[in-house]
Length: 159
Image (cartoon, rainbow, N blue to C red; front, side, top):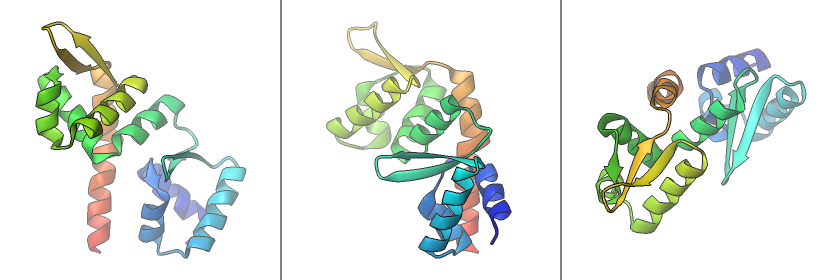
């Protein structure tokens, strides 16, 4: 596999984790790492490293989209956002039922999305209600990048 093929995969699947790319390409860790370093140094891709995850993005992708994809590639956060896109608003107890996680875990996910500017919280009915800040942008990113990538990875892993 050459660097052009690596760039093509990253363009098709922006936000792909390093380990996912390694599994798909079947490249040895050192070989893939070397090639990714060369591509990064040559300005052919963008890398976002956070919380133990290295994600790879096309060079043409803007930072806002990269940050949103990085946040939404987590299964729990994606469930929360998809629920909010359907319902428009949701309370904390509703969201806890959706992701079936502990209080502290849900709080952590909500805080990450609030800090990233994906959701907001309002206290309009005597309790906090959460909603998506820019529904069309988030919906477009999910359709264009998240769902397609997840489906592609599922299909590829069965080959």
